[in-house]
Image (spheres, rainbow, N blue to C red):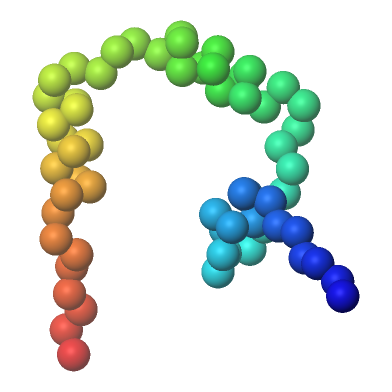
Length: 61
């Protein structure tokens, strides 16, 4: 009798190819970049929110 073990990451990526490992210091670099960026204005936040909440465009048949 054999048992199969999976990790949480494998369960989260069902149907998607596995991502390659990140190089050392990847997330530290991302944190530095995000910390150095200026905050978004209310107008910028509204534009981003609107872009993600638009209905999907339908292609002509």
